[in-house]
Image (tube, rainbow over all chains, first blue to last red; front, side, top):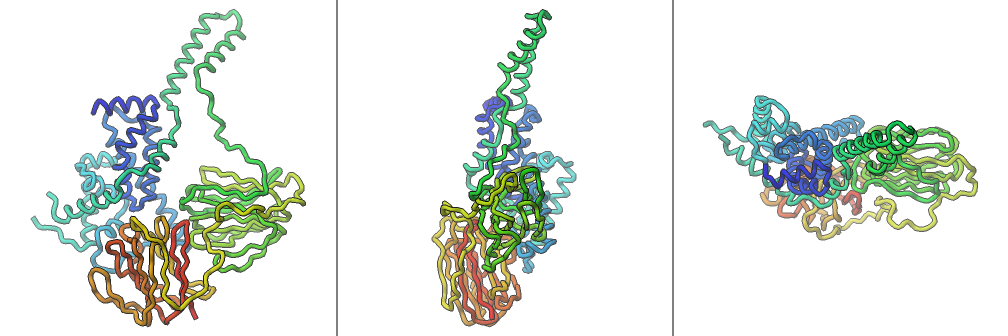
Length: 176
Length: 397
């Protein structure tokens, strides 16, 4: 680990809020962008990012002698998926009572969707896999570690997500 | 090896991520201000130090005088440990007859339940939310008659006075949960408005009664207590001075319908982001279309009538014909639907007049929608805030 970052983490462990702020400044934008890709909503992404860092502050003891990036990634993706599920549960309840029927997402009738709409159709854990692998450029192994799932599960999740995106966008898989 | 689609996906994700160019300062403040200044580690080390001092005190004083030992131990711990933080239980404010505002501006939530109960010295009404307490106003009045939002119709509840509770950016998750608890002060609780994500409840009172408002968390609750400990025959709940801020973004009076083209809004940069569209018929005699934006003012717009439902799609130039016999073309300048608007881009609500609403362009900050009507109709627009909305009412026969 970068020795400067290592000292910052040590100060954070001692309860130094300035050190914590340095970590927020260093990793905040990446966490926020990843949460936004998973949640597809700016305000929810900000909430998930806030929860991520507050949880990190409370759980600094669980960070071993390692780069905090992957550790924060792990918290952030879990927070984003939980946030999505909490939100989805409320929406489902509201829609059942017909209060939010106007805001229900409609699947466009066009045969070919653009990528944005196709990504909306994925499950949040699939979007998390896509975001970590294709946006953060993490290897399958590192992305699996961040999501806390076996490598084979990660491979399968990525494959399923890609197949769904191809179906929705009408893209053909290239035959090598 | 990644193929063309995967490369496109990677490019797309990076472009979408770049739409968040920097970490918002407000979010940074929320995070940093949200952490306690002490950690368990530091408290643990202070406890260890305190423990050490205890042992020193014990050794130094021996068992000669147990009182001295205990006092020394107490002093040692007091000297080392930080001052205890205040009790986290919120202290209740005093009862008052003046309006109260609070909550989190911009927070969007759902109202899960409304309850009321009698307690020793007060009647309590509780509004419980799905997540967080939204921006609210609690305003007393010397009457138990409330005016329904949007329709303007009066609603008379049981009692002689009342309190109006306005909950912004809030959806009702279940039924309106009206009740007639007939407590000492609280007679009736009824929803008197559910308009554009703003819920309004009327709480009617037997006599004018002062109240206090408390925000509670886990779960998020807005608690209103009505003072029943002393007679309040002389109390007046009507707010005396004019409020410093408008209590509600709902229109107090609706503008008349007009049969001419309309325009309005404010030049917006960067583009205002469309987040939702809602379409519904209103019993008062109009079909309503609401365009909701993520923030800022309603962007500059023109609403133009036309004698057909033929439109030309921006960018592609493709013709499109909507259902109906005449149309309205709505064009926002300095607005975009991508990527925030995820609803349908072609809705066919089948209302008395509004037949179809379809996006006909979202390109370079110009956002266009075509509206197919069953007949030519007069219309009006309203620009609302909290959240930002353009409301188009189309008169029905």
